[in-house]
Amino acid sequence: MSTSITSDRTEGQATQYRRMMEDISRHGTDLALEQVVADSGGWQRVLEHGDELKFAVAQTIVEKTRELSLSNQYANEEVSSNYTYPPEYQLKPFEDQIKAVASIFGLDPTSTLEYAGNLPALPDGAEGWFAIPSVDALAMKHFPEVTDPAEKYCRAVQLVHAKIAASRSFYNYRKGQITPDCLRVPARTVHAFEQIAQTQKGEILIVAAQLGLRHRGRSVRRAREVFVANEFGLGSLFVGAIVLTHPERYVRWEQLHTDCDDEFASDADGDFSNAPYLHWFDGELEFNTYWVGNPNQYYGLVSAFLPQ
Image 1 (cartoon, rainbow, N blue to C red):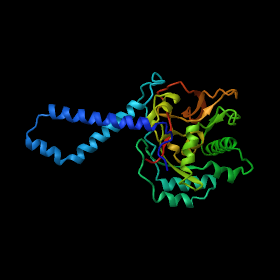
Image 2 (cartoon, rainbow, N blue to C red):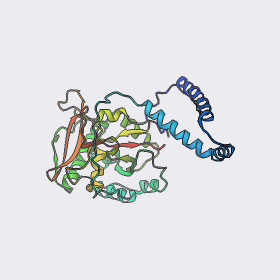
Image 3 (cartoon, rainbow, N blue to C red):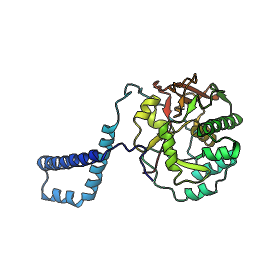
Image 4 (spheres, rainbow, N blue to C red):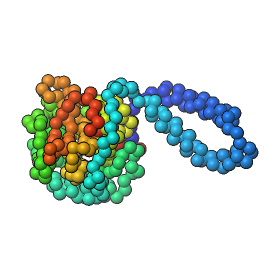
């Protein structure tokens, strides 16, 4: 399975990059030979630690290449933030999450538990593995008459909101607007879940994710702009499912809250320039939306990663 959601790099760019790296390698080697003062014993020690040097140089190349590849678009839509997760929050073992999702939504965990027995390495940037329900599985179980993918997603979000409301104090400022003409999934996220479906066939999916810390203080569209190649946003359905398995994630105002990576058109007019968020305020969890260009120190976009 591809580990990149987008593959816009051309063969010509790859060839040019390799040539550039060869030039950089020669330049770096010449510079080290010229500027590093060491006796023959010192140089021998360097040679004996060749693998360590190779790894360090490779990591620097990857990190710098990634940094330089990021767009500066919306770079002014970042604010400083020191907010983090509440101390009550602890990531639960994914086996427990799978069983909880199965119980909450009436889904079969068998295939997912089997898949969880041989998970790949946790991708860079992810905080852990999270269990979330499959949209198609929810549709088959709870509203089998719905066949349109956009309608399935919205009905699934409505179901998750109902489950949250049954478990804690919850207010939805967008009640009645969780419809395909107001709420939709970004193309990048759709494509990512298509790739996940190639290897995960269960009714419950396991994704490597982070719950906002990585993008805290960034506007939603700035966070999208700096996604790495295998990163994609998680929307209202999946963030809501994580709320159900990790209710301690939202317990006070003075904490980091979450932006959800859906596109929202408040007036159902085709202007999908807003995005949903979840926060805890005045004793309850609240769901609302705001403009994607609004950075806020209290919020961070939730995202997931394909295996590397």
